[in-house]
Length: 82
Image 1 (cartoon, rainbow, N blue to C red):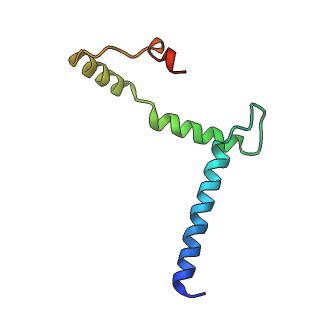
Image 2 (tube, helix red, strand yellow):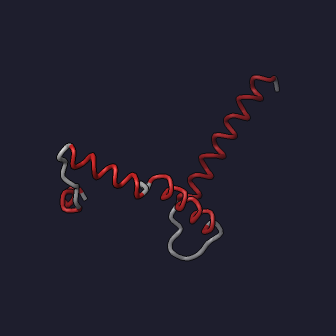
Image 3 (cartoon, one colour):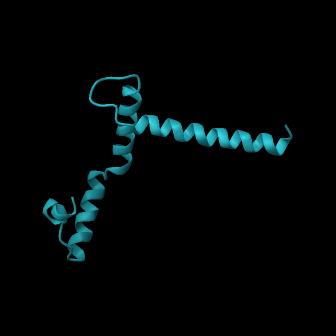
C-alpha cells in the first residue's frame, strides 16, 4: 500500500474504533452489572463533573437571572413537551 492509502486507512480505523467505543460505553445494558459497568460509571461521573455547574457558577447564574428579571424554568413548563 502506498503512504496516502495507509494514512487514510489508519484514520478511518481510528474513527471507527472511537465510534464503537463511545457507543459501547453509552449503551444501556440494564441495571445488572456487566463488563463495562466501571467504565460507564467513570464516563457518567466525568459528564456530571463537566456539565454540572459549581456552587459559584450557580450563584453567578442566579445574579444574572435576577438582573435581567428572568424567571426560573420549572418542570411544569416542560409538561406538554414530554
